[in-house]
Image (cartoon, rainbow, N blue to C red; front, side, top):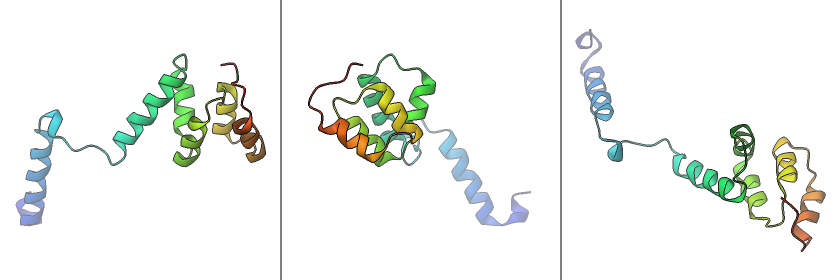
Length: 105
């Protein structure tokens, strides 16, 4: 069957089988897997009590916006989730960042 599709199909099939048999430390990762793990670790360090649903909600944010929100030290969890849902205005976000008193988490 693969021979009917030409040598390119056979070569591709052999490449796929080789990749599947690689040990885990040599396997290719998805493009942004390292960034995803790093961001998830940052979220869990900041808010260890979060559920998976809340983590997924934060991870669904734009990467730049999530990085900015995580870099604001006095950002509380409810404001962060509001930002993830798009319910937090830019003016409110700037006000939280400018406030020197840490919010209760």
